[in-house]
Length: 270
Image (cartoon, rainbow, N blue to C red):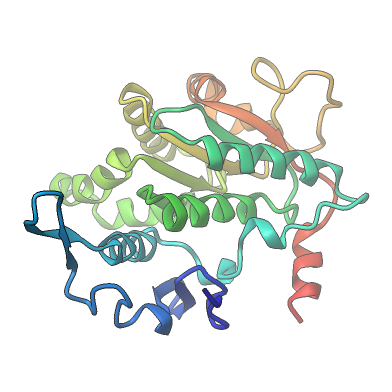
């Protein structure tokens, strides 16, 4: 079979829709070459009976919807493992990419998550989006991406309306895989920490997998052994002992520091 020149075999095309990345079926899959978009086809069994069989295009449609519901920012439209260059100047990225790829390949609901930490521009968010893209489009895993400050803004907008707040928080608790980006950003008020504690505690108790990124350092219990302390303010000081302890139990900490991966990706995309 000749590979489609538009999608290179992915069966989908990505584009921007507002602030979010959007995916749709490629022209090579529309209409479905198997069922003509009927959603099923017929097979004759060993007894000569014709049976309706659901077509794989229905699986593709569900994955397209899951991707578009995930809330992935459009600035990471091209994020995938194939574009990650971990050369001699990016040893942290080489290790992080390996851990991220293994996580994506071996993911099962409830497994330990990842916590990518280090200075800005080092590829933390890019790696999480590469994970999401693979899991949603290749494996059909339901997932959500949420920037921490956007989470707080949405909950502030629902202040005083518990039902509205639950409508927003509920899907974040229930989704099998959640990414919380830029953990620790904000003023660190009691209210902000209570929101974070509620979300993390509910996912922790439900044994659901969460990935975090943060610009703050990981030191103390749970930090990778044998590493020099990072210069960033400790995450422990931003989120408190209780939340920090949960994070270290829920996730494997993965360091990304120093090398400005964001700048390289920007240069490569020009």
